[in-house]
Length: 107
Image (cartoon, rainbow, N blue to C red):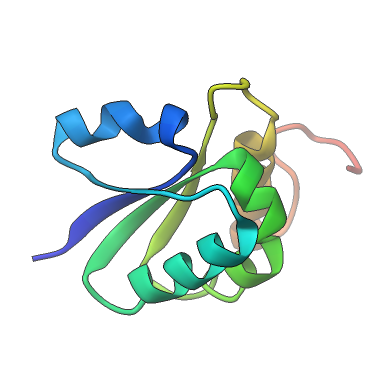
């Protein structure tokens, strides 16, 4: 049975433990990269990652984009929403459909 993990700074992910998700508090992008690689290795189907860490690990996350598992989903941290989540949805839709049907722009 697959699990769900959350990676990010402690303040941002603390509440997810109450929902039964496995939380992995990290602040250092190097440590987060190693953690992501370990978690993506098998037992996790969904990995939530704070937007600030996602920005630091974008190249590594892109290697998993074409894989069926795990789904790596950005979430806002305690500092707020950076807009990375909606940009990832836009990117995925463009890849699947072939054009920008969400914003209908050249971005």
